[in-house]
Amino acid sequence: MSKEQTRPDIGHEPGRETGRNVIQLTIDDLSQFTKTLRKQLDTPPSHVEMLTHVARAAGYRNYQHLRARNTPVPQANRKQVDRAARYFDEAGQWARWPLKRGVRELCLWVVWAAIPARERFSERQVSAVIDEMTVFRDAAQIRRSLIEMQLMRRDRDGSNYQRLEQPMPPEARALLAAIKERRVG
Image (cartoon, rainbow, N blue to C red):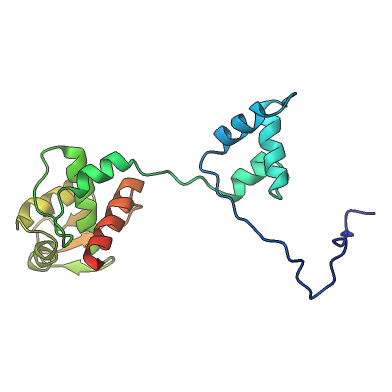
């Protein structure tokens, strides 16, 4: 049988379900998965060979092909997300200014996400958006911090503000999702 020809499933008639259940499997760490799988074999192949076997079983030519088609997504550090989430109240408003810079920067991403993209704002308009998001009402400090983090820019005279587009870190995305869930719930 040539490569162009495909072998029909034995006992499968076109238009008729085979009756088998499809189970999807998501593997968080493929390397750890293959190491565990290798331990179960009497004569295990090398780690790289095992990665290739798993990739081929999933329908890819090799491990490199699997990686090219499935870009790894960085996972959020839940400890950092939970620490930053404590600074938001039950309604999802930012309640207190964090002393630690890392926590504060995560909180600022939530405000950044609330500012509409690709629009120019006056200082008053930006402050209004910030005030809707916060309990402690320190729009000036938050504006300055957003500019320092290069999440926002302003004209020299302070007349126009604009959100700067950039990808959110995984922790910021996770925090934003947790805060949105509080607002809905």
